[in-house]
Image 1 (cartoon, rainbow, N blue to C red):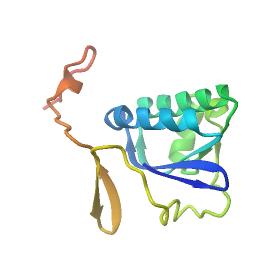
Image 2: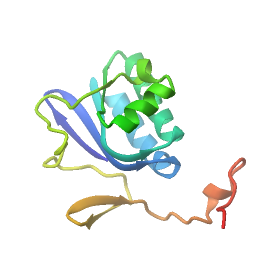
Image 3: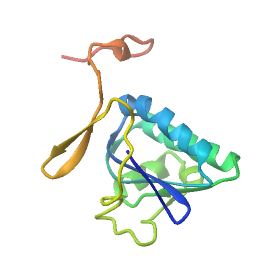
Image 4: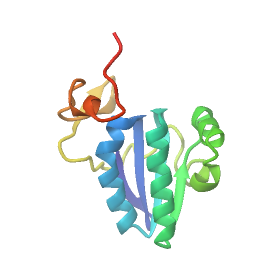
Length: 153
């Protein structure tokens, strides 16, 4: 997640996979942005995957932002995620829109200095930065929680 401000709007640009593991790390960061921002845009145009926990986090942020009386915007144009939002009937909550003014889909927040969650490393891969979660062990506590089973071999 890269966070920057432009024109009085706080933008949180997400890229990569928004799944159970990443949601656990991003939720405190996004909750802080929801509490502190008068206008919050979450840009998910660079996501490559999003599961139900990712959609739940986005819906949580949208509802909490509006409850505070702040403006919410979800920058989203990939057809696969728009379809997912529509199928889960979250379009009225998330209200996905195209790219924010002045940003092309190819370069969201590329030049902005990012703020990354504590303990995360920015690892370059083929010229594109990738966030690597700290201290994640596939056999660790996430798989031992109630209702979660171990990996299938």
